[in-house]
Image (cartoon, rainbow, N blue to C red; front, side, top):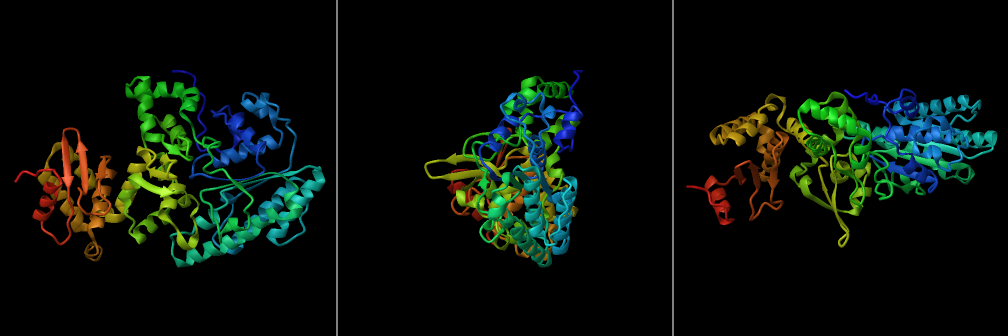
Length: 494
């Protein structure tokens, strides 16, 4: 076995990764371009995508820790390695269950940073304390200040989809954040900043946080920075070739086949018009560590509010396979009017599959197998309940063997388990969704060919030498469904 570098499992500190001689995918050329081009920046990415490591890397660059970068691109560049005072605010470290907790947490972090630099902060109000520390750092070191903010939106998204009381907390926290970040636009502050970066999952615009901070360059869908986070195919080849070979031995596969399987399962995230795809680093690194195809990213936490919202809005999940949207969807994220399509994209469950420049339209879809099958399974369990959560596995088995009578019986048993009140509300679109979830969660390709429910086949499943056609009717006879299938050119034996 080759002597492979230790993988940075759960590690987001650049300094620790380097000093522990763990694997680091060199992003410093791209970071160099960023810190030399724009001063005020915002970047949105799904959770577990390396935002905290990016913040840590930029922090060490501005702190002048040149020796940590000895084997990386930036070390031999013309970067001057000047030392700047750096303010890092990580909202993961702050309790956000009330206005008091949020304000108190912000103040504690600012006081801690002040103590680190030998500065006593006298202001009591969190907004003025933020101004004070920036001004005093600038005056003490006679140089501009760097501000790095990680997961800025945690105080808001932690409370979404959890009931009206929690929604009110989210709204109050939003007002606090808006007031806090408005500091960074004040004349006596903005002139003292060298670089600013906010990261998060979402961008709250208009009446939200960014109404008070509209001078940020949004890097989220920038072609230039599409691969700033995540691992590209080229980086996979350079940094993980030996790991792929080791996994290939474990699975009895050659290098190319092993790489193809990894690509299908973990690659596919695209964040710009240009076709640049990346792997989720969290999933990829955990796979190479465990050598098992598992849903690592999904297992690390699914936002409850997203599942709750899908159920509450009765969202038609099958459309997520091939969802065409305008660019406006990507900037639509407001507490008062959450757009499920925007949520699915920003949280990483959907990604860009294609871009039509002539019509300025984006086609969204699941990035890979890990996300699709685990997401559908999670939704299915929420839809049908825990009592029947394992029965859908039998559906796939019967589809493969062609045991149609057994398939029908297991579907009936699942339907029978749905509470009467919920079942009484089911319409044709609900049955589309339920069948799509049951088949898709089992890892089988369910093709929904109609969204209007008129004149076309509702669902098609193709498994090896078998093709299944399903037509859904509510309060109509089976004969009517068969007639519709026959009319559309697929003859059913009588």
